[in-house]
Image (cartoon, each protein chain N blue to C red):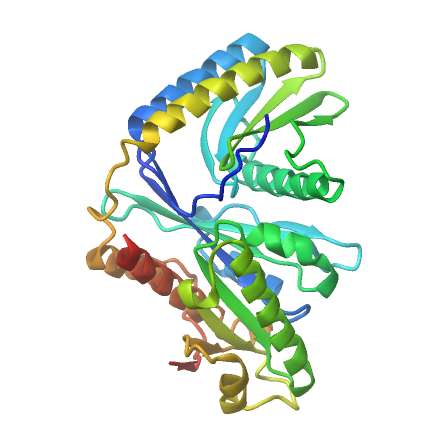
Length: 194
Length: 178
């Protein structure tokens, strides 16, 4: 969190984490399309030729003036592929809240678990941990066949009982709800630790 | 500039006084180097203050990319055994260049300048500015204001309302847990 008193700005960093192709960039693209254009910056994307996230996507949102301050939320995605480990570590630096976008398909459970473990390791490197950072779980791709039940996803991924949201990000279902939940969660956490 | 050997801060508050002093340093830097733009941002890519005429330059995106770029090269330095990181980054274009360096561990300074300006001159004045800003920040850390004054339950409620009002159409129905 960065507070600039002269500009009356409070900046918070939210990172969308998760395995490759789970829908992290799709979340940001939907938010970009749906939010009032006067409240957002440009959607910066660093992609490979195959349209996969190479480094990160970035989108800044602001919600006007609240109690004399301008809260700004800087949303980042990470590249999900296993071999971009260094990039993920870099992007997590200074994170205030995390959305873990899990792929609900049964055959992607191992990738979800690997990515969650990778997240925990990277947080520890930053002197943090999943227990000490506000995060929410988005169960994405609920419209596809052969998906795990919410109970099964809860059992395997939600061992810390964080808020969960079912989503179909390509259709926008659950995307804004996820954003609202993580922002609420981060703000509550900030109050507690202040 | 060598990297300070300490962990990054997760929370930082910049006083109005420090902001004004840093803005003055940037103005001097811009004038001395005849730069088009000098931007001071944090290492997470949040633009803090700038001098010059950004015109069509999107400072928010530029700062996010500067931070990503700098962090990536710091990892590259680590991989080749350069534990102190690189002293600066220089991006040379056909008409414009960018000079980028760190201010301690938590902040970055980037300067956009025309091809006609000598890199050596930019380096000298940038080094001077980095020292001045570092000293301002050190002093500012001892005079942090309290954020509890406004970050309360009412703030969260108002933010929630602002969020609800910010999207174009009703949110499709969703199921949530916990």
